[in-house]
Amino acid sequence: TDVASQIYDTEGVDDFTIPTGATWSIDSIVAPGFYNVVAPNASKTIVTIYNDNSGLPGTVAWADTLNDGDPDNDGTLEPHFIDPIVLTGGTYWLSVKLYTSTTPWYWNRITAQVSNYQFLWQNPNGGYAVCTSWAGLNPCLAIADSSVAFQIYGCEGIKPSVDLGPDTTLCQNATYTLATGSSNANFQHLWSNNAVTTSIQVSQAGVYTVTVLDLSSNCTTIKSVDIDVSNPIINSLAD
Image (cartoon, rainbow, N blue to C red):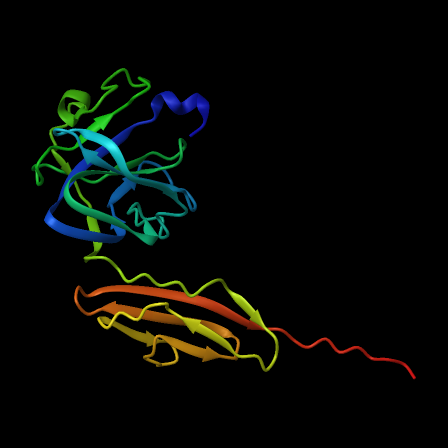
């Protein structure tokens, strides 16, 4: 946000728990909410996941600012992650907010407390003269609600690691190998040309996509690469 408005920066967090011994690979988060004015156009979304520190947000486990977290401009923030967020068993705190000072976004609240702890809020720079550190909505804003709504999508386990390399331009009649780099017997491959091998040979322009499924965990990775074919340069020489 701009410097003049930083005193009004606020943040809210709610907790979630991953069972002991489990590992989650998180692809996306859905946080229903609403705007008090016209929705912004392609506003950036800040997602932060904190480790738990005795019932309060502690150190940052993961954080990023993503472009256009609300593609429908309907108030529901839907950040998707190019690389999954991998977290092991424990309690975490989720923060989702817009990177803007001109369009306030409000997280949909739930009256009941649905997790280990109640939703927490803070205004660190004191612009609202309340709760410069983490506290519940009731002491901060005289709001009785105890939780906010959000959904976490992904799988339990580690997603297959797949790297098809960068987009590539081929010379005409050239052949190029696309390979996932995985020989794990538990990984099932399906390419957009219906091949089921770990690699394919391509010579035509197009977007090639591979889906790799880990049969042991049902975790899936989807990767694409764009192949172009250049036109030959023909020089005409005068007699």
